[in-house]
Image 1 (cartoon, helix red, strand yellow):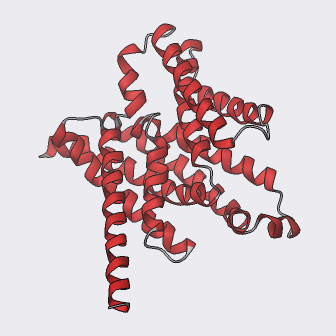
Image 2 (cartoon, helix red, strand yellow; image 1 turned 180 degrees about the vertical axis):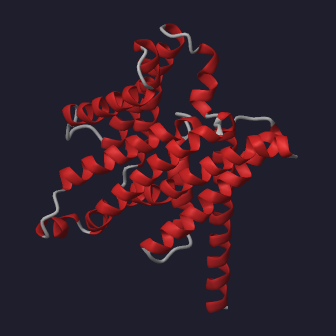
Length: 273
């Protein structure tokens, strides 16, 4: 039992730390309608890891460089004739392909591809938790600083402009936070599933919340539940940890969706016999 806890405990603590950050960030992603951007940025982390391995530099620098390139690239290719979601989908697929190509052909990381794609939280040790906690604390501090402006922009952008809020600057702040989260969450759920860890808890919470604060709290509870069941499920089913966590979150979302629909039907039937 002690040997099991030595493996599971740091993974669970790391996942819990990530849940603290993913819940409010995920809610903002939904409110700001940036789910496609988060997906593109998440896929870009794979290319960042590949470039870092190729150039023999820290992974964080590679991810940061790719994130900056993605933001600048989206500004340059912005065209009113092209739907924004379609452009982001193309960027996400392109980044994923480039990342896989670079990782498998130009580096010695072929054996770690599955871990980069789907995460492997169980490999995280006790010595890595302080750094992860520090990154999460910095992220939460920055998020609390920009939170009021982000809420105003998500609610009514024109009114926020009148109040002196700069949408472009706030968008860049938020993009930077998302990029940082993607870099930190890469080992937990992998490049392919980061957007699931962000969006699914917030999407589920939206079904049961009536205020922004309530939505963030419920999203955190759901994210924590997904991490806990996902870590144990990955051991029981012998599958990738990130795959297990996101699968649990998806199951929780569909259960909540079905239950909410059934509740509405019963409520309507009671009112209109």
